[in-house]
Amino acid sequence: MLVAIWAQDENGLIGKDDQLPWHLPDDLQFFKKMTQNNTIVMGRKTFEGLGKRLLPNRQTIVLTSNKEYDGNGALVMNSIEEVLEYANQFEGITFIAGGGEIYKQFLPHYDVLYRTLIRAEFDGDAFFPYLDWEEWNIVSTSEGTVDEKNHYPHDFETYQRNTVNSVNN
Image (cartoon, helix red, strand yellow):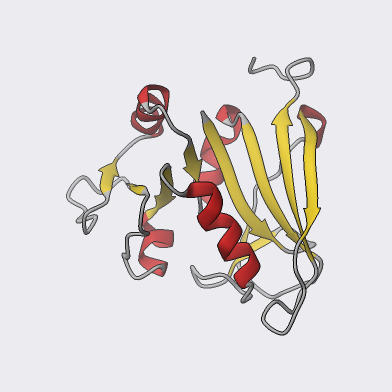
């Protein structure tokens, strides 16, 4: 199964200088809970924005056109087709985790979306690509925690592809 997971502000912003433009520990915990014991796929810039650090209890795939790229222990793949083949054979969930171009390349292939919608606006340079929401049904939504560590109201949303309106299924 191929799933997109991301956090965005009210304008669809997902990043600034290959980093998250906000600090929201509640969302980081959500990401950890959802992706544990599964695979995460990210582009080279996103991986380097993490300091080329592997996240515990997850298989990391770095998608890059550089065939000589040193993934620092991550699997390195050079095409979308290679990632899709991996996802089809993997028994767990393969999460696409950024950045913007990587999300866009996999748009036709997602089965499920996990979006954290932050009810605020930030400055940045990376946005989630256009998504035709008519192709998706909301399955669940829950309010995130707002406290001294989590300053921004946010919701965790889960969507499933609408097979009736989808041209891909």
